[in-house]
Structure formats: C-alpha cells, structure tokens
Image (cartoon, rainbow, N blue to C red; front, top):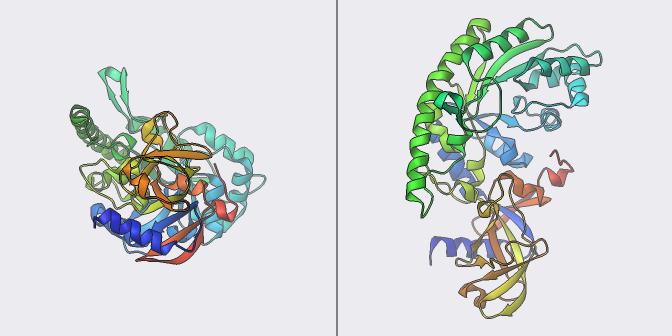
Length: 400
C-alpha cells in the first residue's frame, strides 16, 4: 500500500461516521510541518499568519510549540477579536480603513498593547486619528517595505504591488512622520517577499521556467538582503528601540532567517501545506488540510460525480487555483466542466471502484481559504477524529 493509499484508509476510517462534505486537519502532518518551519527558521521565532489557518484552536496549537511567537493577522476586526480572545501579540499585516475598529483600539489599553497596525503612508495616520473618537491610547505601528525587485531602471518589476516604500530614505521619512505625531509609536518593520516565498521553483514539466524562477529568486534575495539591512539601519536611526523586523513566508523561511537584520519570520501556509506549495526545491510539506466530497452519481465507466467542490482560490485565475482531487489517486477533472458549484464529475479508472456515498478527498490550492467553506475542522490523529473545532466561519467570523 502506498503512503497516500494508507492516508486515504486512515481518513476514511476516521470519518466513517461523518457525512461529507467535510474538512479535516491531519494533526500528525500539521505538527510535522510546524517542526519543519521551526527548523528552517534556525532559532528565530515564527509568527503564524492567521489568514493561512483561520481556526483559533489551530493557531493556539501552533503557538504552544517552541519556536512560534505571535500572530500575523489580516484585518483589524480579526486583530481585535484575537486580542480579546487572549492572543497578546497580533501584527496586522495590511493597512486598514476600519474606522470603528480604530476607535475601539484607541480606547482600550489591552487592545492597544496587543495589536500593532500596518502603515506605509502618512495619510493612514490621518485616518486613524480621525477615527479615535476621543480614545487616547498610543497606537503601535509597523512600517511595511516594498520588497519587489526592480530591473532596468524600474521599468521591470518582479513582486507584489504592496507598500509604496521601497528605499531606506522613503521608509525613514515615514518613520520620522510617525515619531513626530502624538499617539503613535513605531515598533517594527515588515517586508514580505512574496515573489520568493510564494512562488514554486520546481514546476513539473517546466524545467526552463523553473530555472528562470530560481535565478530570479536568487537575484531577488541578494538585492533584498542588502536593501533590508540598509532600511533597518535607517529606521533605527529614527527609532533606536525598534522591537522587531519581520520577513519571509513559508517558501523562503531559511533564506530570510539567514539575514542578520531580520528578527522574526512569518509563515502559515506551511502548516496546512496546500497544493500551491508542492513545488519547491527548498522544502517539502506534508498535506495536512483536506476536504471530502461524497460520490452521488456514477454516470458511466470511468466517471463518478461528487457533490460540490468548486472552491477556487484567490489570485490570477487559472487551473492552479482549483482544488486537486487527491485520494484516491488518479482522478482528474472533466476539462469540459472542471470543479462545479453543485456537482463535479471526476474521470479516471479509480472511479470504477467508488460507490455512492464514498468520499473523494481534495486539497485546496491555498491554505486558510478552505476554512471559508466549512464551519468546523475534524482533527485526525492516526485513524480517529480526536476533536472537532470551529473555523472562523464556524464562530460567525467572516472577516473578508
């Protein structure tokens, strides 16, 4: 029996009493992935990216392990909710325009001490000040650096369009603007190199593309390491007591951790190991988060139909954004239909061994987005479900 066939047997056994659709997290794989992130971080703490987990129980499980510290959140409302729930170090990774949230933050000493907000433009400070509604708490601020690689005098850009702050001088200017402003304090710098951390460099069947990606990423790492060190020096000249410098992502943990200027690493997708993180030369994760759809039709030889399954991931549309049929091995989409809203035909010889009511197991393209489809996650250890925990959605929290 192959390792994947063994996993299928375990998952079917563990969930035999449960009707699909359902979602699971294999805790053995989750813990192994967590250990691997810590190993690759080389002694620097890993801050858990909550958007890639979206389940409080699993955030707590990761943070209970040595080597993890703090949460990187994705909305201000989520940040405040986590802080009220006992998470005492929450870094909001994106600027917000949530006026009501800022009013709460500025009025509550506990929230203001636990939550750090993201800024890359003095206009964001204006919005926060206009939202205070009399709240006088000091707002902790993190400055975001644009990590993109610019070539040919800036005519070619590689990387996500995030912060406008690219040079040490630009980010130091904003640090000074924050320092001059009552009610704010710069405590950190964040720089997420998505073009390195979030792009696989070993694409099956694409050797030339994979080599080009590796060359690009090597150049990007060299350029960013030098610029990030200069940025940290420039900001420390303004804010000597800077608390942290955050960088990285699941795909670049060990490279970013090697930089002296970086004090902590951000990662989250590596805990679930979704399909978009399959093709890296630097690490191999164990698929930990899966969902099952029930077989409801057998239209013919080599075909079964499962209920639902059309759960595309965010990003540029393409086949790589679809979930992938995973267990049993050998199933594929009908190219005329793909992953459907209400039904999904699957082709392949394994279909002939599936009966009505059997489960087909899928992997989502991304990590936490799976949790927007399910109220609960069934936690599997060995061949049993040992706990069932709510996702954000299951707690009535749909932040985006």
